[in-house]
Length: 369
Ligand SMILES: NC(=O)c1ccc[n+]([C@@H]2O[C@H](COP(=O)([O-])OP(=O)(O)OC[C@H]3O[C@@H](n4cnc5c(N)ncnc54)[C@H](O)[C@@H]3O)[C@@H](O)[C@H]2O)c1
Ligand SMILES: [Zn+2]
Image (spheres, helix red, strand yellow):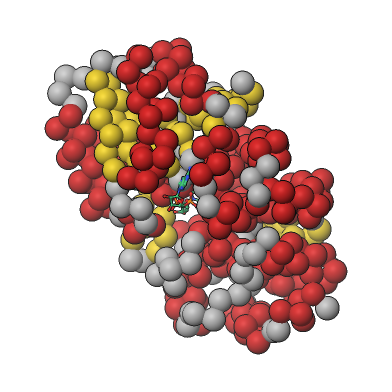
């Protein structure tokens, strides 16, 4: 089994990656002394597809365990459901050495992490991500959150899991649409840090979407290594290092919220990355050819670069609520070339609007031309 350590100053967090990594779960729970009584948070379909693997492990090492399922939707990331889960966990948790297991995609992961952070001011938890997006991104780094009507991920905490188990075989049941969505974050990593990964994606995206297991393992390893290297230097997002992971997310989150979560996170950040590339060209940071190359890859993978279903006003309003701007009107992660980012703040509203308008008016072949 491969292992990547996120070297946080207080406590290192291991990521275990393998084709059948969940087979090692019992051993890892024991090794890391996470607890005796497991509360697994998941969705009904993931439980039906893969629950047996977790049950087998828990039977071996736990005194007791329960599975709690949540509705399969971004809307599950809300404070009411978090409190409801806490009630269920409290009923189960009578004089126990409890720990939580997040078994699902980014939605389950963000919510479980948040509950683990606030229940009794913090109980141990493990991330077992089951989507490509969660394996390459959301399970790593300890950002936990729920959404509110004022914005995405507006209430949350930094709270690290005891460890992360990435079993790439779990991706076998993932619909190819979800592989594409996960690839949005992979494109992000390639754009901000890794030219070779970008070329690899250009060459192999068809095989990846067809779930070639060697390739999936390779990109999961590479992205996990990039994310680990970034977050370990900026665990709490305070040193302007972690911020580069927000490439495509400033506008992406605005689209995601303005669509009332009708578009997925991966689709929203694809639109956001296309936007950031156009804005980079507009500000003369990036050349048009590279911008076109990135937009072409996003489209070839089958991800959107624009959305008609939004009101400009809503996008701008949501941008204002972005928690990351504190004191600034806005902040974008832009590109100078593939692999090199530049943080730009306080971009005038007129410029933001102009690029929005241009993207909306543009024909797809205009980007490729
Ligand atoms: N915390 C972070 O750092 C971070 C980073 C990126 C994204 N996120 C969050 O992640 C969320 C999106 O996560 P997501 O894309 O994983 O979506 P998701 O959790 O909604 O999962 C997508 C779909 O895949 C299904 N699914 C999951 N695993 C499966 C499997 N193995 N086989 C078949 N179907 C499976 C789910 O049931 C769901 O329908 C967003 O809320 C986003 O904000 C968080
Ligand atoms: Zn993201």
